[in-house]
Image (cartoon, rainbow, N blue to C red; front, top):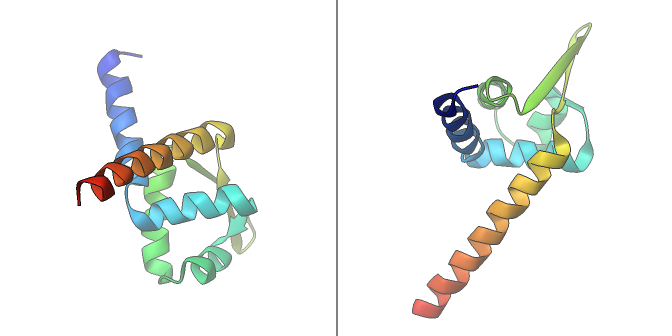
Length: 105
């Protein structure tokens, strides 16, 4: 894989998880394991259409996997260990930058 391709994929993951709803979906799937669309919609308190858009983006970024079981589709995190580390790194960075902001004001 070329370096440009890796950079593109990395930026795609960051952009996708950068949406608060996508972040919430990823967090929830990490904490609760596989869930169907109705369960996700109920927990994130957004419309089915909104959740479907974000799930599509997460699937495209290769973060979320899915499997259809008759009328229900189950979703889960494809690489849970790596995604968990990524989110922890993001949260640590936010914590550090937030401390700096609080200190300045």
